[in-house]
Image: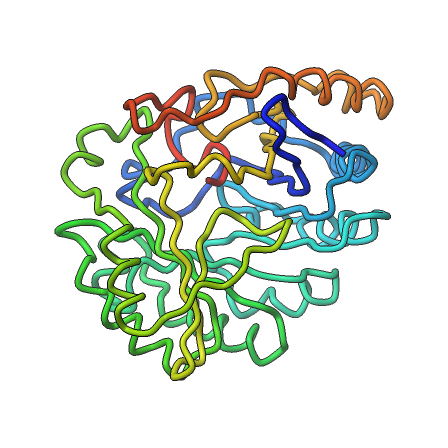
Length: 322
């Protein structure tokens, strides 16, 4: 089992398979995707090596991320390869949903166990203004289809002051009859968003207190769960999660590592640098890869230091998929 020097265990791998994204979200890529780095993305064979190696180190869950992972034509094959890896119990994906509902059948057949979809507003005009994409209707149709197929769906929504903060009540109304988990994510500062963060950040704690006052109850977090604090209410079909990276002790429960689309290990979303594993991955040397991952993990810091204004090497969230 992978364990760092602070006693945290790592059951969960976030694997980016591309950093390309076709949306222009104002908090991430307001000017659209810029090809400013090596685009020699991990091959299917290399992804299989990564999945086997992390499984042998105790990882049981893989989340496929981007950029936008569905831009990879071989995504169904990637899902299937990860899902068929011994020891990997769950393969899930984070997507902007732009190809919904056309691709869900292929993902389901390949073995996807859950889908996270980014929806920052249920108002089509607000959604379009945030993302630069007039796709809300199709995305919501895809959400309905996935839920009807029995695929667990989570909705990621970044609440921003002066942009979509009024969407909170609309989302709550939607959850009364919609069986999804809606996660409100605090806006995070990145290397290219200092001014945007200062203007639009909303803390999650007041939202948490509002939920508790309205009768929402905290759900116990599983070992391979992400960082969200989740809540349920007997009068609602859906659940709510809060991801509050600026809250006290947020990093204490860290259980996930990240591999970039070019084969770098990121010990934290906001680490100062990615640590290259590409040589070992490309050679298919799983023993050497296990040793290197275990050794590098000893250098993992106790915190992301976001509360001190440090953003590390993360220019924007599409680099690693959050």
